[in-house]
Structure formats: structure tokens, C-alpha cells
Image 1: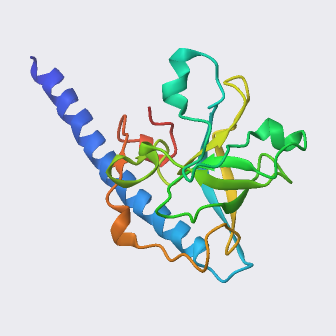
Image 2: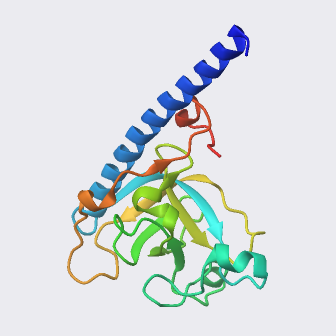
Image 3: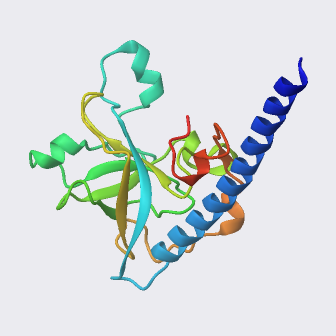
Length: 198
């Protein structure tokens, strides 16, 4: 390897390391902001930046069934799609998120869909614990239940959290010690400043 190539490789590695450290710091800051929003006085609202993807658990394609999960939420209740809510067939839209932050049924709204009621009732391995992945640093990952992959979902938007509006009995205080240190997917040093990380 030439000296020039070695310098480029070293610089790329250093940039990725710095990007990873910054992304982890931003992930912790995001978690703290969400915890404060959820634990705010009942009836108050807080708006936070999120990264939204769609998942379609009602797929008939065998290659997608395992990836998209079952048709029930994390407590065994039926999932509701965005399309069903918009057609008046569902009381809310099911969302996957970090169950260690959000109480079961936490109500949120998303700026891209005014008037739609979203509730965080589902989860997945990339939403919590040591395997949690922030694809855009500083934006909490959420997955909206939709009918199919053809449903357009705007990835970068804002979510409003309605404190105290959830299905848990009593109050839910988040134990930060349970959250752990999330993994951060980093493609390069500049990714943590708002670029998509894949």
C-alpha cells in the first residue's frame, strides 16, 4: 500500500470513529429529550425530530413475512395500518418504537399526517437496547404500520408526544439504566450531521 493510500485509509477510519462518537452522544441526547417528553406533566406536548420508516406486516409475500413481523403488536393486540385509520376502520395507526422509552400505546402525531392518531404499540430488535440503530443521528427511529411497501413515508419529520396519553395503567417513568448503549450505524464522519446513514 502506498503512503498516500495509507493516509486516506487512516483518515477515513478516524472520520468514522469521530462520527460514531458524535452519533452516540446525539443518540443519548435524543433519548433524554424523549424521556423528558414522555415524563412531562399529563396533557402537555413536546415536539421532537424523528426518522420514520414503514413496515407492512400484512404482506402475502413469503420473503417479506419474517422481516415485517407478525400482525399483532408487542402485547398481542391487532396492528392497525395508516390506510385503515384513514378509511375510518381503525382507532389509531400502530407504530414500532423503543418500548423502554415509550409506554405501551403512547400517543404521538407526525407532521406529515395532520389529524392522524399514532400509537407506539410495537417494537423490534433495532429499536431498543444494545442493537438500537439510529440511521440519522439525533432522530429517534420509528416504524409506521402501512399496507404495503408502496405507501410513501417521509423519513425526516417531527413527532409530537402527548404526555400521559397511553394505555399503561398509572404512570410510566423511564429507567435510563435499562436503555443501554445503542449501536449507531455510521458510514462516515459527516453522516452524523444530518446525512442519511446506511
